[in-house]
Each structure stands twice: as structure tokens, then as C-alpha cells.
Image: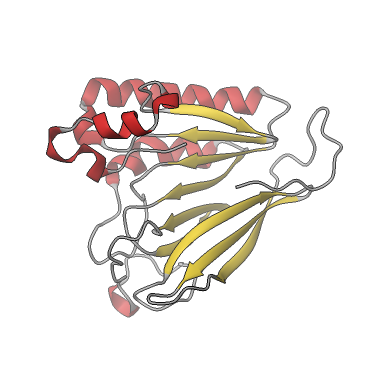
Length: 220
């Protein structure tokens, strides 16, 4: 499962190679999936290449998808994935205003949403807004971008107290009975051993769902 980034649109490709590598997406720029009690929403945050018509269509679909998951008694929480980060202290890219305007408001207002997971900034950051996590992760192997520090930061509430240039990383989410457990797995440049860069938990917005009386389950 994937979401397109800005580089996937480079060279006038219009995602030809992206969809060739991911034929099971059947040409969908945005879609939803279920994993146990989790509702998963995948967004194409490239507003320029999409143009206004598809962008507005996606927004309507997104808000309907949130409503469907809210109404589904089998869903305990919702995670939203997209490439561009609404909030970041990156020194290379800025907060994405289109993402903020189009997706963040509905995300914050939906009771079941738990985390918005993004990339683009080539680092790792975690913000908490109204009890919901905004996770920026950059572990694809590209050049790491330094974050603004001190008084230069746009946001002073980064929950991860790391240096300006952060290690390569990926985020592993595990479904547990009382919470969503999240471990950020780090890899230092030039090293071969992964290490736990950060761990934290997000409690379920809905404590129990219909037909789910099992113990912990894990997934990636």
C-alpha cells in the first residue's frame, strides 16, 4: 500500500511507473482499507499535478470515508496517510497549507482519528494536536534534511527531542487491546543495526468494538 510523493510525478510521468509497480491499486490515487479494528485512509497530497477538479473530488471522498468509519461499529480508530506534512520544522520544505486547509480540519473533528502519518521532510518529527498525533517520517534512504532548531523553529511542540539531522527511520504500528503501540525504528548513517528511536502509545478512541473480544494483535 502506498501514497504518491512529489517525486513520483517528476518528468511528466503522471505516476506511470508508480502504478506499474503497484498494479493492485488499480490506478487509484486515494483509497481506504481495513486492518482489524483500524480504518486506513490513503491520500494523494500532490495538489498541483492533481488539479482542482480531482483535488475537490478527493476531498469529498475523504470526508465521506471519515464518516463511514465513524459509523462503522467495528472500527476503533483511523489512521490517515499522505506524503506532504501539514506541520514540520524542516529547513527545506514548509508546512503544507493545502493539506492543512483540505484535510486537517476534518481529521481533528473526527472522534476516531488517531494519527496522520506523512513524509516529504526527510526526517522524523511528532506533534500532538488536540490529542491526535502528526507523525513525519523519512526513512526511504534519500538525503536527510536538517530541521530548524531553537528560535528558528516554526513549532515548539515536537515531542521527539532529537538533533537537527535525524537518523533514517521507519514507523511500526502494533494493534493492542487497549491502544495502538508505535515504535520508531532508527538506523544511524553508516551503521547496520537498527535501534528503537522512540516508542509511544495512542489509546483507542473507541474502547471496544462489536465482535472484538480477542487479545493483542500486531501488524505493520
